[in-house]
Length: 275
Image (cartoon, rainbow, N blue to C red; front, side):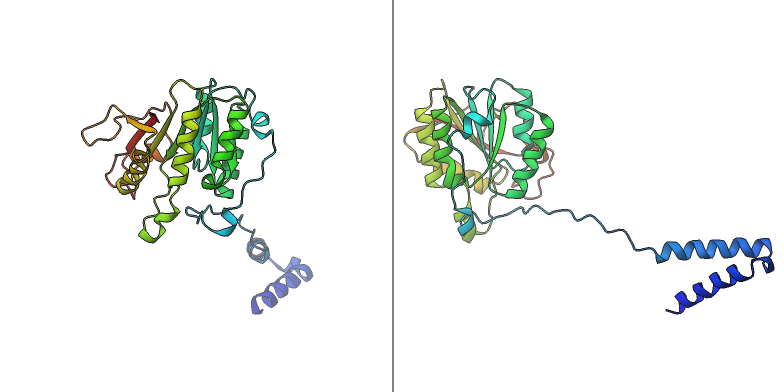
């Protein structure tokens, strides 16, 4: 309050007796008043950045509600719904789907993401890319995948591949039940691959966390309708990715920047096709 009174007095003095101030005094008073005006002005509000949650409980009641989809959603999603279909389970911010679609226009690319905020970012990226062969759905794959794949088949899309790339490992043992690859998800994928009209459909699994990758691979190995294919490296994992474009997470991992990676620069991969 004392500073406000002082500034008011200075302004009054400047207004009533400007002729009594010599030039240096006037310049000093102007600088002081200018500084005061800046300090008196309210600070601009900082724009709040919405934080995207890295983890989500897929078993929560609101997460197990089926996605609301129109009967013809698949046909409306793609310029040519009859192209071979690649499905990315857990598409995160959508970078891989958008980049793949731009790189390969001969296929349709569908990203499934459970987190609404991440899905919104992906949709924004897709709008900027302006491609007609990619689409995103905000859904829980363990709830909606069977219907999604059935809708795609009904629209005449041959299923080429289902990818599960670097899913949330849910490190705590009590949270392993939250992992995306469950017996139900594996059975859904296996049935869709067996019914696909594509020449050699497949399921591709990859993680930089050895225990999580092993759990996914073991789940798929336990399905008698699927066979694991190589070539494999010395550790028994798929030697190289079958995909032309790496995910953002994969680039990070292979550069040795994956903080939670089991082995820096290493991704553990597996590929399965119908038996």
